[in-house]
Length: 241
Image 1 (spheres, rainbow, N blue to C red):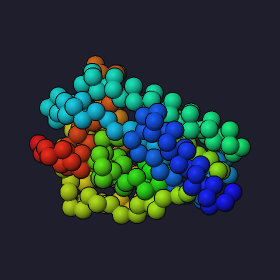
Image 2 (spheres, rainbow, N blue to C red; image 1 turned 45 degrees about the vertical axis):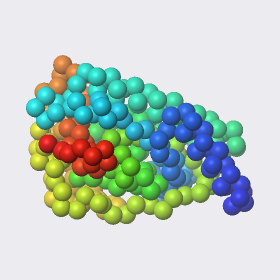
Image 3 (cartoon, helix red, strand yellow; image 1 turned 135 degrees about the vertical axis):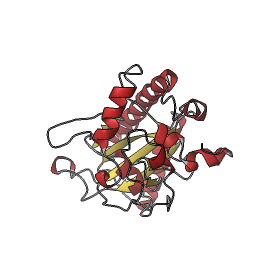
Image 4 (cartoon, one colour; image 1 turned 90 degrees about the horizontal axis):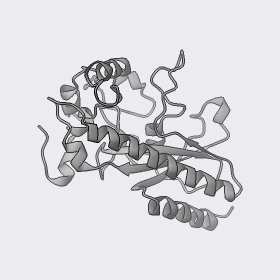
């Protein structure tokens, strides 16, 4: 495939995804970062949808998540899975291999607790969409951490973006101080290759949600750590608590 063809097909794929509801689309080189079963799929198409600011703003440190947020969370995950399916099938029609990784799926195998098959956040940093914040969420310049993600892995040669390699959280620890579970370290800035556990203790986060928010989606969501993030708030001229 020529460079001109790569650019044209990337434009077609991006147009398809954005017309179907994506807010951000990028491609990253993930060669060498995949398990053996997926190592032939060297590129990751990262797709993000901006969550409703109005719904996120209803999440508070005192109350936690809302029923509306839980419904919104599930709805956006479904949208993302549908977007990924459309992109995957288009890539397949072009004659290449592609696999859509579910937007929200925890395998919880013996050696893979609280993990999906492939980390969407890592794909997004490789695709230039943002960095991993101290809340262990992807933080984008446009929307802060108020996004949900999905990934399409493929062997199709596409134009890749410049990866993000530095955090822009600096000395901020608002999310860590607000976390009701005490699950966020708050004193470490992300760099590529940093283990997730250096930023967050996922078991503490999960147990808190199940204990405190069982009445909302059986304790599957929280959202406080990205509700308070200045990168999400300050874009609209508001302030954190």
